[in-house]
Length: 437
View (cartoon, helix red, strand yellow):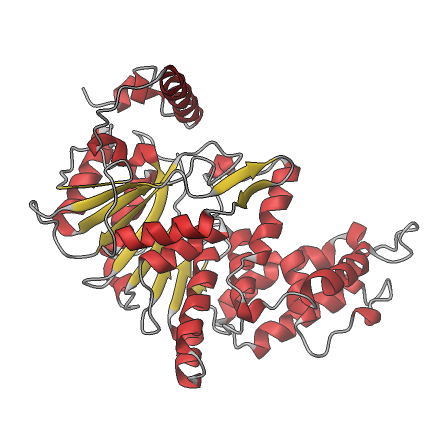
């Protein structure tokens, strides 16, 4: 509903004052018509795609509760929401000059308070600072073609567009090509697809090259025709099982890499457990990835990156279609102390040191400065290794009692998180048929 109203507000013929609560031409019908005009003005096509989008917005037109005048409000809820969004969001937010995924933030808040947070579907929305970090780690350029195969609310595509447009400057041809031809995505969930498409359309990406399709069912050779030189992905979490190994995070990673052009750069954010490859299927995915692609390194993230979800994430970076050299040295970085901290009643916020720590990470990643092994370990890697800093790092300092207590606490937190994600087989508890003998 929020994304639909924002689209209507972006239609030059639509005025909130026209919402009169009429029972014949309802407020919802007026908003729905404005959405339809806005999509046609943006040349969103083909018709089947536009129809799919409009079906997601149909509740605006069909909901009696939204279209009836509320006695307390003195207007319909739809008019109240429209006026509120116009005043507090639409008139004050510069969509076209920001990498912030505003609609995604709405979605996340609604899900958090409704109790339907999408976790049963493995949906974990990516924070803005991670989206921006991806762009920097991949050194995104104006000539890149970006693919996000699990785009959610389009956070990565919004960030990529912002970074590319900044580098394009006043070159209108470059800016037009970036918006119309260089940003591609897939999203399986129809409601998320509508949000993602709206996000891009509001930034003048009229074609909105996002498809409401299952990425895993796409032929990599066909997707490769898009010419993507950059891949960004936050796949569904904890959906893979022995009976359906295609849903493992590493399955998505392999499919993404296979779908990119030769030499393309890719970054994915996945749970730490994905990098251990404890099941036979996950081990096979790791072997296949190294056989055909190169792992450049893995960055262990702040455990609160997805605050409230209980996932300990890492960022893995790859080069597509270049087989992994056995003797090449790669970087494994511990970036858990990233300067972001949790504050009561607010959530994860940027601390005073976050910008400096981010710059240090980038300097180390690109070889502009050296770092102690506590922060970065450089090593060769094999498929059977755990692709984590903690696997390669050796700490020869004698731990204090506080260090011991913290390690036990971290382990228990990790174990609980994995059990909640149905990965108890990592600890020899249940589901042992999934574990490698």
